[in-house]
Amino acid sequence: MTVKLNRFGSLALACVSLSGALFTTAAFANEHQHHHHKAMQQNTEIMVHDAYARATPPGAKTSAIFLTLMNQQDKDIALISASADIAGKTELHDVVIEGEVMKMRQIEQIDIAAQSHTELKPGSLHIMLFNLTQSLNEGENVQLTLNFDDGTTHQLTVPIMKAMNGMSKHSH
Ligand SMILES: [Cu+2]
Image 1 (cartoon, protein in one colour):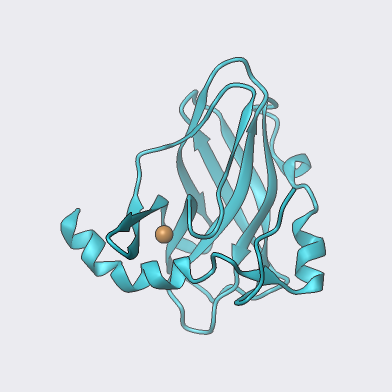
Image 2: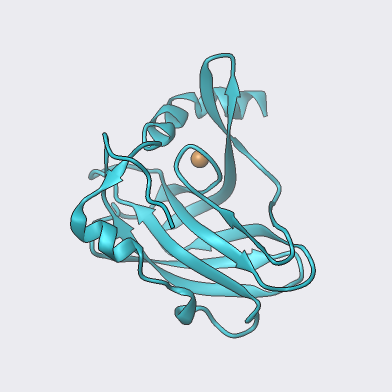
């Protein structure tokens, strides 16, 4: 774990630099489309909103996916893993502050309390993509699979969007 944190130290900066990021007008409009209608029906009690994958420059090997998970059940649920068609490896990540440094760390699961929602966003929880097989180009899509601790699975199409520095995060 220590080795992993050190190895990803520089990635953490790239990740966190998006906090306070703003989106182009087109991307902003896109972001507010809801994508839960694309989810498969094994689990109708979980909805995914505002999902997007961060566009990458050519040759980049990592990116991240952000989304909001809504749990309309009367019991807690947890996201325990994810996979994406364009990533050799996918991890669940959080961002922690150590001293004045923000670092990403891998986490076991992302909890969504009963009748609640959990937001994955820049500078916080996210789905980390490693070993990208292609660069992520704005306007294209990523096929994402989410696996929950009750055995259910969601598959959804996530749009790729370019995040620009200097703008505030979206609000609901
Ligand atoms: Cu990460």
